[in-house]
Amino acid sequence: MAESSTTTRQPMRYLSGVQSSGRLHLGNYFGAVQHHINLQTQGECLYFIANYHSLTTIHDGEQLRKFTFDIAADYLALGLDPQHALLFRQSDIPAVTELSWILSSVTGMGLLERAHSYKDKLTKGIVPNVGLFTYPILMAADILIYQSDKVPVGMDQVQHVEMARDIAGYFNQQFQKTVFKLPETLLSSTPKVVGLTGGKMSKSDDKSVLPILGDSSEIKKRIMSIVTDSKGVHDPKDPDQNPIFLLYQLLATPVEVQEMRAGFEHGGLGYGEAKQRLFLKMEEIFGGSIRTRRAELEKHPDWVEDVLVESAKKADLIARATMEQVYQVTGLRSWKIK
Ligand code: AMP
Image 1 (cartoon, protein in one colour):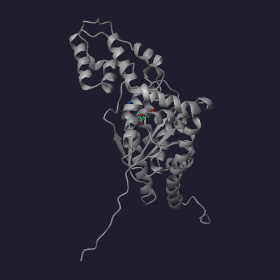
Image 2: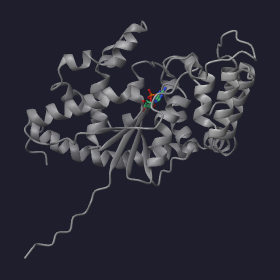
Image 3: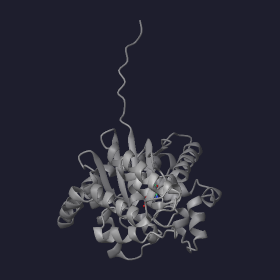
Image 4: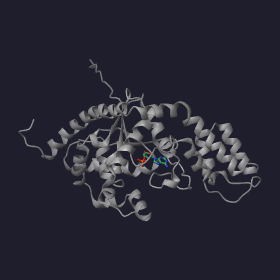
């Protein structure tokens, strides 16, 4: 007679982080944050504010604290519900840096030297510190310590998630035990959002950034400063090379997008008018109730802090369970410590 078996399916665990090195921008939102918020009812979600990562570029305690608060408050204003998802500070789980060292002991230099994001930063003339070079190992520790199944990120992070997978594989193989799950990347439908200057929108290039919850005069000023060519209102223009159109199509309805496309392609729509439409869409989507909620949170930093602290306590339990296995297989811990 066949044995009846009852299997309980574990919920999918999603893990992602955002650096606290500036306000959330439209690239963060459409590449990652909107996706994070949508996933919060579909599994177990852990989102952290990557302040250890930000420390590679920000060396001002007050500023790092402020950016950390801003990212947390932005997430909450945009709809992250702490009843459904954890939102915590990376540095509140110090075992992450401990694991990072342990993982660095099984990671070859060659793997890090192939990192596109590191090579891009060198090309931009950034003088790297060691933290910037070993960033993918810290990110691997972030992902692996929580035994994450899926990592919802933008395109620029795909290689780093693959590295986390590789590092998990090396570790499991070296110590002959499957301690870490192999995580998978999850991309949103818009994983690479263009910046105001035509390249990728990125916190490391302030001119490229369109903040989503800044004050409306700053948002307007940034949109109005998008550099365009000298084509007049009636000249045909290529919408697909144009950040105004590319950003507008993320926000507007299909009919509105089609109208802007036609106006550019056939002439009749000038850059000034198109910028105004983009600004009004930003206001329609991120102004109103989201801006009001964000202003409320600004007045209640204690509440935001409580969310971070309480979430960290729960994330810490998961991290500790993983670290127990790590101590066990590596032989790092005294056998007298239970
Ligand atoms: P960061 O601000 O670099 O910590 O990025 C936080 C998240 O936003 C990561 O998942 C990134 O991949 C994503 N992201 C950042 N910039 C963009 C962009 N321009 N387009 C799409 N996703 C982005």
